Length: 235
Image (cartoon, rainbow, N blue to C red):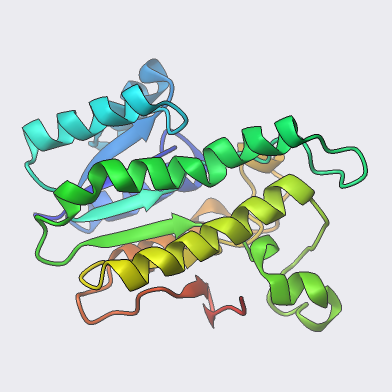
């Protein structure tokens, strides 16, 4: 039985990813910052709820201790929790605003990955999926008009876009340092969720497809890559 943890999974892409991985036979720990919402979502899906605030060291340690006690290992980690945050207007952004966005989008996945690495190392084929964004691609940011087939929309957002670029680099560093780990960043695309006031043209089923696909790769799968629904994306 494959044991999986998904952060930020009580709604949107995280919940849909949980639903599909459960259907595929995974035992899913549904991570949520809000305990009540997490329990409700887990009960509907048949997942195991775990309270985890990716910005809080004690909360992440507690979640790791729970999974260690109940499962003893972790096969798949999906770092899905994220925020759009403040500090996206480059002319108005303050360091504090940008730092708050990074706390969830960059330090959060690093904090969670660090805490769960000992459990992932006990897996025969450990996998990590970092939910990033095409908005974090330096190549696309440099010439968005040349990549219209990859993104249905592009906008400038200092804090959010740069946080996803940093997450992409962190993904590459883990891949080089942990050769047994299959770790990749993925871009679900502009998906209609509460995250963006349901402004995206994709459904959650469409957006979750690449997350689920990369969560289910085997030990011979890619590592240190950046993928969208149609394949590799430019850094």
